[in-house]
Length: 341
Image (tube, rainbow, N blue to C red; front, side):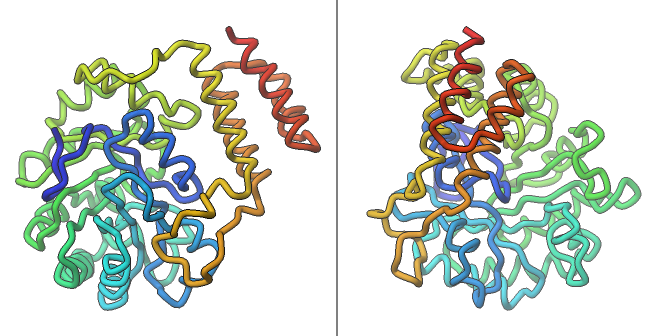
């Protein structure tokens, strides 16, 4: 089974960290269905923003199943090291560095963070080395194959990371220029696996057990990481674990079970205290429960995932998403979901 430093994961099938997606509710749900690791949403390394609502919501909580992994993003090696040191002192068990985010706000800014850093291998090395040297917990990186097709440098970045003491690599099979199209390619991941001696985790377009089996076989990767493939399908981890590794889930994954899971996910998203107010946040400088005032927006996003993934009545989607009250919306959602049985 996949190990990251001294952590032996329960499954080599991991949930990809995604901003605006992998909050506490989502992390708990995919772990429940067998994800071996669920890293936090991307968090800025700028500690002056620690008290902002966005940062507070993205932080893990101390009662989460371990290992607790936090993904940080930034451009300054000293600032990144300071952030890593701070989060480690507060209970983080793994620090993940983001070298993969393709969005303009991150990779297209003047400071060039996320995947834009792949254009500067020296800066990548300085950031990694500073973070690794600052803490005594494992460091991982998530990155892309390069900035564009003409400058794919995933092998060199992987070797730099290994030389600096990184414990594992998660590689998305696209360049930054590709964003999320066309289809991910796995040859680069295969080559990186041949050139490094630390665990390599393959990421990109893995949305079924068959695709997972193919990626494992073709790349030789030690693990896989699922991103958008888990939208509205948190049970995909259980399906892959069962088919590829013989790890049985506690419940039978029937259509009725999936409908019930979808409804419960939406119900919990309505609860502004879905971030357990009795639980201590990893960091909570305000000493107050962190609430999700935008719960209706979150619920709409979750509902849309399930409606799309479960092939329900598309003509009902608009009415469901425009419902005035949670009660009305949940009733319409149940009707649409259970109509698939």
